[in-house]
Image 1 (cartoon, one colour):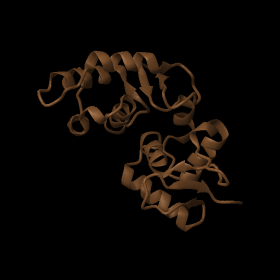
Image 2: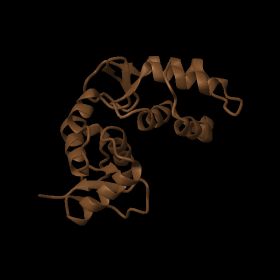
Image 3: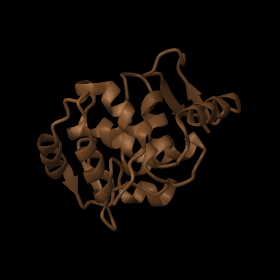
Length: 183
C-alpha cells in the first residue's frame, strides 16, 4: 500500500476543478517522493483518496482516461501535453532525458541550455526577442526535475540574474522571461 502525502491531497482539493491533469501530476511529483516522476501505484492511491473525499469533486475515471491518452514512451521532449514514462512504472510531465541530465541541478542557466538544445519549442520567442522560458515554467521544471522547492528555485534564478548567468524581465510578473545571458 502506498502512503499519500496529505499536503499534496490538500493542495489538489484546494485547487479543485481548476487544476489540470498536468498540474495535478506536478503536485504529485513535487510532494510524493524524491525519485524522478511518480509511481503509478501512487497515482492510483491519490486518485482513490481524491475520489472518496466528500470535499472533492474529483473524477477518477476521467483523470485516468486523460493520463492514458497523454502517455508516451518518448525519452526526449515531445510537447507539454504529454506525460512521459520513465521506467519502473513511473510517469512524469518531463522526459527521462531531462531527469537524467538535470536531476539535482540548481543552476537555471543549465535548464535554459537544455531547453535550447533539446526542446526549443518549450521556449517563447516574442518578435525581436531571444528565446526564453517564462519564470513560472522554469520554476516548475527546477522543482520537479531538479528537486528544489519552489522558493529555492526562485532564489536560484535571482542569484543567476545577480551574477549575470541569466537575464530576467521585470520579475513581478509570473510570466517574466528568463534568458541566457549573452556570451
